[in-house]
Length: 150
View 1 (cartoon, rainbow, N blue to C red):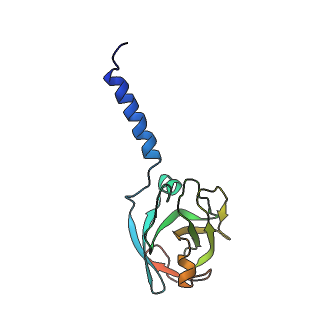
View 2: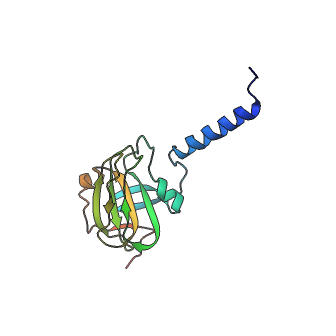
View 3: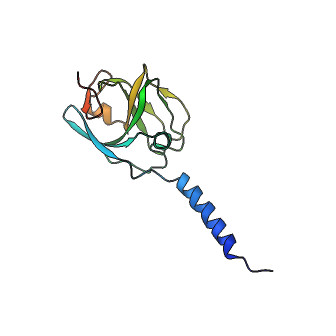
């Protein structure tokens, strides 16, 4: 038998790193603070197509009071699913002015589609139960830098 070459090890290591990176959570996204009434929300911002397509996939947990804000180029119907997402989430579909259009509870590791009731530019994902515990429903106004003030 011939010894395995360094090139072989390099190819295997490169392939493994690539596969691992595709299945790893995004951890270094930009952060901003928004508010929901008296509640401060630390959000990671997913604004590029790659950031939005990965979202909160592969995360084992998300701290209470934190979320991910998905920012799109313009208002349109937004639909989300939970493929490769391990934690139960609620999506708040949010209009340009910060008004929550509708909320959707989403089960982990499913491909069920959860869509906005009308065109929106923003989607805020929080741990499931967060909005309900705070009494936040459709029609509630979020505030912060991304939302247009009337």
